[in-house]
Structure formats: structure tokens, C-alpha cells
Amino acid sequence: MTAKPVLAVVGRPNVGKSQLVNRILGRREAVVQDMPGVTRDRVSYDATWNGRDFVVVDTGGWVSDAKGMAAQIADQAELAIGAADAVLFVVDATVGTTDEDEAVVKVLRRSGKPVVLAANKVDDARLESEAAAMWNLGLGEPYAVSALHGRGSGDLLDAILQALPEAPAEQFEEVGGPTRVAIIGKPNVGKSSLLNKLTGRQRSVVNDMAGTTVDPVDELVELDGEVYRFIDTAGIRRRVKEASGHEYYASLRTQQAIERAQVCIVVIDASESIADQDLKLLTMVEESGKALVVAYNKWDLTDDERRRYLEREVERDVQAFAWAPHVNISALTGRNVDKLRKAIDAALEGWETRITTGQLNSFLGRVAASHPHPVRGGKQPRILFGTQAHNCPPTFALFTTGGLDPQYTRFVERRLREEFGFVGTPINIEVRARQKRANR
Image 1 (tube, rainbow, N blue to C red):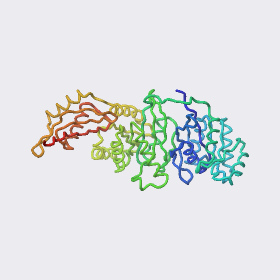
Image 2 (image 1 turned 90 degrees about the vertical axis):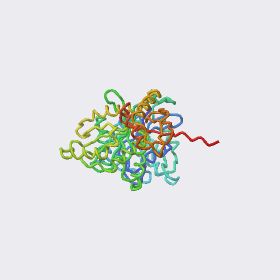
Image 3 (image 1 turned 30 degrees about the vertical axis):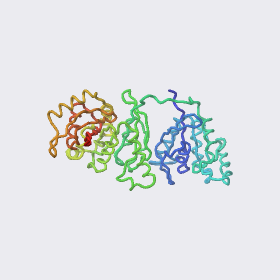
Image 4 (image 1 turned 180 degrees about the vertical axis):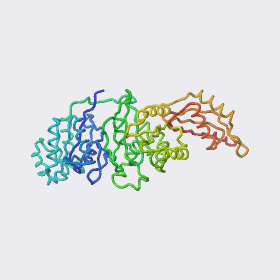
């Protein structure tokens, strides 16, 4: 399949890049807030215009003399330019050309990539002259646009298609595609460090400050010859309603990332006590019906005493998720990161497992014979028949003579795992009690 051409969107902080990306996409995808620095990593989105597909890469604001986290953001923008087929350079028409804009132009000229210049925030005709002044950047015609109102976006998109190389008008997705793996966890547990260790390069911005990642970040990673699509997500805070502004939207994006994924790696900080929020995330993955791997990160920061405490905490709090593979890792040193691939594959295999109706009913017969359901109110419900309704996650329908106790349903689930594995996947059991016949 021919790769889609890539458009990198760059510019100073707070010139409206993410808002313009949303306008190009025709949907609200990139996190937008009236504050510089909301976008920190380079984030890819699929776009279509006039029947042609291409990929838009949104980047953090580029600052020439940046230090600390801002320098990493600028590096991500330069990496995006290097990987792109064309660049959309966004400037703020209401501010005019700045020294920072001139610095970005130098980087763009060095890259040798085709550049489309967008003079943003031209919300009405009175600002057309300010947009025209952008000719002095020497990048050709400045396209006057308003990301807020959509003004001029059609002409801009036509210019973008001219700058991008031709690609087939119609593209077909590969059947199945790479396994989608979401990396989730509380803020600052090392999710981005883990993605960087897996990719072997500085893919995500890493900082000790909690909440560095805002948008979900997709990255194709090859592990032992197999390609996976990893999704790095923002740390979910205690309650979505407590988050404000871009944090609120980022937490919603994280929930969407879980829905998109097949396997979720929940990263837990092994150097700290397991928190209620860690357990809520594990429950969220289970309720979403996704395969689960638990990664205890920062193992290099734990001593013998902390490991003893952690063992007790896991036994007390995480026992309900004992079916999920767990790996003790250090994203910083790389300890056991290579074992994650085996855990992901095991969880995915369990998630996709399907057993035949014959196997299931033979199993149910043995279970009912050795451990019949307790008598309740003078009656003893019996399982008449069972079938696996679907997999991903494995879901079973049990047809019975009456309702089953929740404890008995959990017992059947436990025995299903002992018999058939189902490593790393939640199991859904739906009890369908036989309706009593109406008296004639």
C-alpha cells in the first residue's frame, strides 16, 4: 500500500496551529486552548480533501532559543519537518512578522521541503493587508485564513494538495493492521519514557512535571520483527470534572485511546504506594473490554523493603486483576522492557480466543456435576446450555433455569480461565434465565 503524504504544521507558540489542524480535518481532534504550549509532542491525524488522503502532523510551538521542555518541543517540530513531504507554516497576521518567524523560515529553507504559508487570524477583510505583508518572509503567497471561522480554508487546502506529492485517490486499510496498544496511567508514572525506550529514540516529550503529554501520540514500533501501534496518552487525573481547560479534553482523548486500543498497558509507579487512581484505571480497561498488561515501572527506584510492601499491596488490591500479565520494568534503564512484547502477545491471544460450543458445554457439564449451584428458596438453578457469543473480549451466554448467584458466575469465570487460559483479557458472562410459561 502506498504511504500517504505527510504535512507538518509548524509555527510559533499560540498562532493557532491546532485550531487550524481541526479546520483541515473538519473535526475537533487536536487539543485547543487560548494558552501557548498546549501541544507538546508531534501528533498525527488522517485527513482527506478533494478525494485525496494525507497525514497532518501537529507540532508544539517552535522557539529558536528554547531551553528545557521548550527545547524538546522545538526538537519535535524539527523532527516533524524532517519526516514531512511538505510543511504548513502558520503565522499570526494580527501580530505581524517576528524574529521567531524569521528563525523558523531559516529552518524551513535548510529542510528544502515545499512550504505553504498560512496567515492565520484574518477574521475579516480589514486584516487582508496584514496578511499580504507576510510576502516579506520570502516563502511565496501568504494564504489569509481564519482557523476560528473557516475563512479561506478551501484555498489553503488546495495549495496544500499542490505542495504534497501525488498519492492514490483511494486507499485501502490493511486487513487487521498493527496491534494497537495504549499506554495509560496516572500523570508522571513514566508513560512517555516507556514509549521512548520502545522506539529507541526521543519520540515523546519527557519532563518531571506531571501532565506533559496532552494529546494521545501514535507511533509505529517494531519489536522482534512485529509492528505495533503504540498510543501514549495523557495521565488521567482523579476526576475528569476536576480537570480544567485542555486537561479536561486530554482526559477525554485518553478514554478514546482506550476505546481504540486492543491492548492497554497500565503503568503503575512501583516506587510509590498503589493508589485508588491506579485501580480505577485497571477497572476502566476491564469495563472497556480491552486486553490488559500491568507494568510496574521505576523498578530501579525500589529497594527490598519497598518491594515487600508492593507485594502485599498487589496481593491485597490488584488480586482482582491477577489474570493480567504483569512485568516489573524500568523505562529509564530499559530493565525488562523487552518482556513487554511477550506480555502484549499473550494478552492479545487471550482476548481473541474463541472456544467451540461443544468444548464449552462439555466444560459446563463437568463444572455443574462437581460443583452444582446452591439451592435457593427451595430451587436449584441449572445451566442448560452455553455458547460463546463473540471474542474480543470473550463473551459467553449461559441459558439457565433461573438466575445465578454472582458468586457462582465468578466461580464459572475462574474455572473458564483455569481450563482455557484467557490470559490478559476480561471475560463477560451473560446469564439468560428461561422465562416461565404463562398459565393457560
